[in-house]
Picture (cartoon, one colour):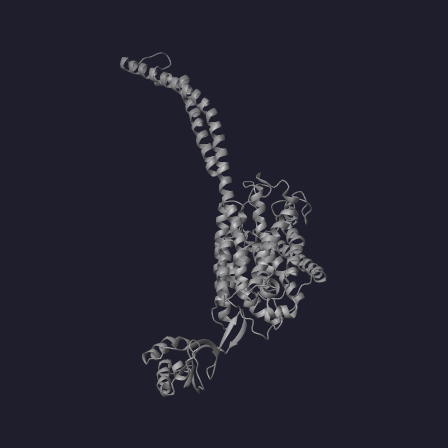
Amino acid sequence: MFKKSGLLEFLLGTSLGANHLGMPIKNFNQVDRNVLFGRLPGGVHYGRDCSVRGRSQEETLTKMIRLSSFLLLASTALLAQDAAKIAALESAVQSAQSAGDNAWMLTSSALVLMMTGPGLALFYSGLVRKKNVLGTMMQSFILMAVVTVLWALVGYSIAFGEGTPFFGDLRYLMLNGVGAAPNADYAATIPQQTFMVYQLMFAIITPALITGAFAERMKFSGMVLFCSLWLLLVYCPMAHMVWGKGGYFNAYLGGQMPAFDFAGGTVVHITSGVSALVCALYLGKRKGYAVEPMKPHSLVLSFVGACLLWVGWFGFNAGSALGASSLATSAFVATHFGAAAATLGWLLGEKLHGGKPSVLGGISGAVAGLVAITPASGFVTPMSALLIGFAAGLICFFMVVVAKSKFGYDDSLDAFGVHGAGGTLGALLTGVFATSAINGALKDAAGNPQKLGLVDGNAGQIVNQLLASLIAWGLAIIGTLIILKICDLTVGLRMTDDEETQGMDLSQHGEEGYNFES
Amino acid sequence: MKKIEAIIQPFKLEEVKEALKAIGIDGMTVTEVRGHGRQKGHKEVYRGQEYMVDLLPKVKLELVVPSSRSEEVVKALGAAARTGKIGDGKIFIYDVAEAVRIRNDDRGENAL
């Protein structure tokens, strides 16, 4: 954009200069000529030499005038040619931007899918006992298949069709009309199909995050039905409210209560984290909880998974700029800084709590920071990102290590402690640290960038963020309870005691993760 | 014939094997085992959940030798496996009634 207008100014500036040059010459010709050529009013000549010099100067000047007139004509002709050139350049710049944006968005889509498989699958499966390693991986992997089909059939339309402020209409049913043409409401420079597939990756990972709460005890069929209904009744409506055109909280497309959620603090992390807590409470504890040892069977897997999550998160947050823009860079940096500071925050928590700096603590902290920076990533400075991350590391440590054992619920892999708590914290802190210095896309009536968060002097934004978080909490609690009840009454939710003792790998899938004798 | 069963620190296995080889003992059976005697276990913490781990990884060697060599083997084995710290393990010695080589039905010390 800058380059384009710069070129235009340059070309226009040249032709304007020619006009300015023309004007003084004309005036000079008519008014100042006599003075300059030694003819005073009254026809007195100063002398021969002077007169001769004057004549030759006059000839030169006439030539100059002719030349300048010619240049004026030529530049007018050139201007027409330039206009065509500018148009051609503009369209070249546009298609180059389109290609660049599309390349980044396709890359981001792949990065976000990588967060689910293998990222989350490894992170979670390392934390369970080895009899459940495959079953836990499968819970993530099956969602890559099931959610994709549901998204294509109806999910995308519920989330991104216009509809009401709370639920999209069915205009994109079966991806009707979702093709190569951009949808200017959402992303004007990439095919809508790219936007659709990018958003799909978010829809895949969100229910996959919940599986950490009911790990090691849920029936496969119950889990698939639960996640399918949850996608359509909780995720898609929430995504519509925050990101859909006309959505209730959409700050950019006509929302009645604008809330800022750059990459999914409310939509992804609050909904999944709070639903996870509801699931953990509804299903009850694992058999033998707090009696049998339930150590993570391989923190090596979890470590690799967490590192893949960190990398994939660049697609999640920087991709949410929906283009290869400087905003994407800013979100990339904020994301990274948030994760780094949160790692240190969690480790400090362990130290203050009298423990050792653990690897599981370090990677849990990184994930907590990534969660908390998600809604803020496109609105905050790098220094704010460090603060948000550090706070998330400490607070999520407290939720997971202190609060959970106090309340005694079995959120097996801490989906609530990390995603629910971190997501809520991030949503609120976005209201504090969001600044138009980073994201000036919102304009007020006079065309100036709108004040975003508390640091900009807009304290009221925190209230909006709080309300959006509360709605997300409410929707997650009510929606999840209803869906759990439906699943419980139809296919059932929990494995039998024998199946649970045997492990998911054998009882649900007829396989084992580690066959050392083979 | 005597059966010598030694439970040792896993990291001492190579030294013990070398020491036995040096006095001409090649055959043995080795198993990874877990257990503890007077050595205390340790504490592990995963996201605030504490686990006491008192069964520690050890290596068990089993070998059967002619009775005449038993004392020599026990001395060599003990010397090689010793660090002087708690947790070094134990050696148990049993009488063996009979030995059979499956391949050709050799009996007694010929089967060793």
